[in-house]
Image (cartoon, rainbow, N blue to C red; front, side, top):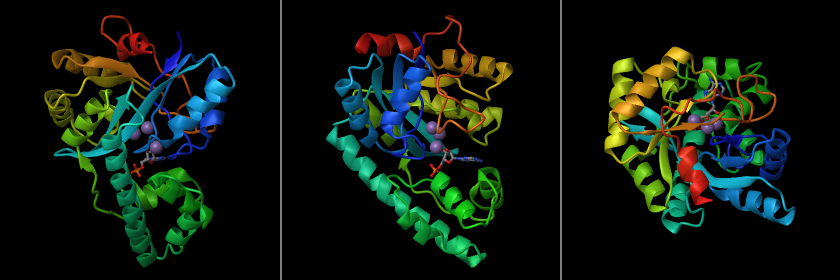
Length: 279
Ligand code: AMP
Ligand code: MN
Ligand code: MN
Ligand code: MN
């Protein structure tokens, strides 16, 4: 059964609407899809409606990707199989969404000081639901301060960029707690994309497991075989399940397409088995 447990719609920084995303998934013969927007569950309702109204064969897993802070810096926690109507989760996400707008304004102020002007006004005029750095990068490009996403992140808002803004996300413990109390599985997203040494990454995985996390992404685009083996050992050591997902954002983004990631062998238990039972 073809599946993908990590992707975005235009309810965060993806470009497809939930409808278009479902159509795109069906085109790619995906039968089980988790929509995991940044800090938002709002696209799920529309995706379910679309599937129901059109009698489509695809199954949707309710998901989320929460930004969280740890002693090792910012990380992303995917929640799979959550109750999208859970009030505690929704209320906390609302605060984090507000925090995202405060942060966007801070980015805009700091960018203006180095000559990149008009970013916040541009964001306000765009139809944005949950504002992310992807939207800020987009504004930088549209206002002609960078030629593409790569340059916008490298020059301005990426890890090595000129502009730094303090993050004010919930803690890792809170993100795991919220996902669990909403009935979901907490998954450490794309572990090799954080700027951490192997030693720190192994501490992060340990800390994630000890705070009640269930699983870790072991298969996603850009993860090489050696690193995957390394992660698998650490997953086993910490009794974490495996998860897989493309982190798809939009069709023309070269490095990731919906449903495309290496297959994992069956030597490690996968969240797929639990999720399939639950739907
Ligand atoms: P935020 O959660 O607001 O910090 O935004 C993070 C999002 O920005 C990620 O989910 C990616 O979609 C995007 N992103 C981060 N770094 C890069 C990069 N170097 N190039 C393109 N997109 C990026
Ligand atoms: Mn994103
Ligand atoms: Mn992420
Ligand atoms: Mn993602």
